Length: 442
Image 1: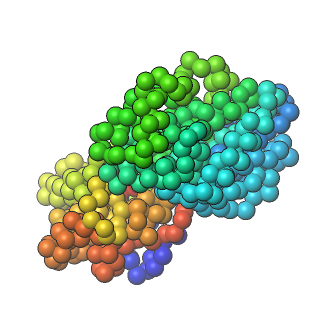
Image 2: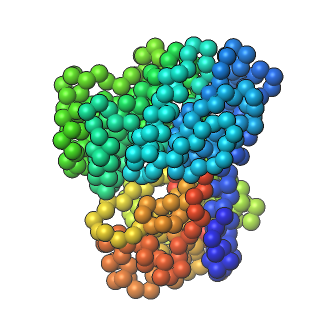
Image 3: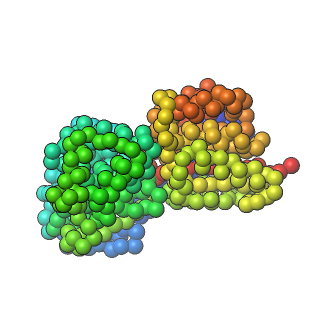
C-alpha cells in the first residue's frame, strides 16, 4: 500500500507508524466495509441493523458519487447479485463493475465530465418510481464529483467559487452551504428527483461529526442550510463570487428562489440513512495495531479541526509531555487522532494539510518519536502524496522550514528529506489520520 515502505522504515517507530496507517486505510476500504455492513438473506437486505424487504420492490438501482463510490458499487454487486438492476455512480477512482455504470469526474474542482455524470445520476433517480429501491452511495469528494449547476449558472461559476473558498481555508461545511444553493442536485434535491421511490443512503463520511447533510453536500437528505448561510460563508471568508453566483444567492436570500428541501418535506418519508464508515473506522484499526505491538494507544479525538500547523504543534507538545512526565499516556504509546484540518493558502508552493501538519510538528518533536499524518484517500491537497512521515531529525534548518510554511511549499521541503508518504489513490476517504509513535522512556 505504501510506496518505498522499506526505505521509509528507518526505525521500529517508523515501521509501527506505517503499519498503523496501512491498517487504518485498509479498514475503510469499500469492499471490507460493505462486506461487514450489508448482508442479504432471502428477500431481506440488512444494512447495519436495518432490515429492508427486497420483495417489496420491483427494481433495485444504485446511484451516487464520490471518491469511493465505484468501490462501494462494485462491492454491492455480489451481495445483491441478480436483484440489482443497474444504476450509475461518478468517481475519480474508477473500478470495474458489471451492472452499475461508472462515470468519471474530477476533484477537488468540478469538471464538465462531472457535470455529464451528475446528469446521468439525476436521470437514473428520476427514472425510479414508487416500486423502486434506490441505494444512494455517497462518499467523500461527492460534492465536487457531482456538479450540477443550477439554472443561470455555468460550470465555470462553480469552479471559481469552489477554488476561492478552498484557498481561503473555508471548512467543508461552509463550502457545501454555497455548493448546495448553486446546485440542482445537492441539498436533498437528488431525493426530490427520486421521489416517490424509497431511498437508502449509504455514506462514507469524510466530515467531522458525520453530518449526512454535509457528506457530498447531502444530495439525498434534508438540508438545514439556507441561502442566508451561503451568503454568510462567502462573507466570512472574504470571497467575492462570480456575478451569477452572487445574484442567485441574493435572490434566494430575498425569497425569490425556493430553498432546498428541509426535514419537513414529505419526500424524505421513506428515506433512511446509514454512515457505514468514518474517521473512527480508521482510528480503531490503527489502535488495534498499536496495542498488538505492545504500545498503549491513546485517542485524542476523531474530530480534530483547525489550522493544520497549529493543531500539529499541540500534537508535538503531547509527545514531549508524554516523554517527560508520562502524561497523558506513559510510553511506549501511540497517540491517534483524526479529522479535517485546513490550510490558509498565502503562497504558491506544493503542499497540503497533512504535509503542513507534519512539517509543523517535526520542528518540536522529541528525539525518537515519529509522526505520520495522511489523508486516507491518498491525496493530500496539491502535494501529490498522501501526507508526511516525520521525526525529530526531519528539520535541521528552522529558517528553511519557516520559508516552506510561509510559501505553503511543505511537500517540496519534505520531499528533499525523504519524509513524504505515498500510497496513490486508496479507493476510500474517511478524513485525515494522525499517528504519533512515542517509544519507551530511557
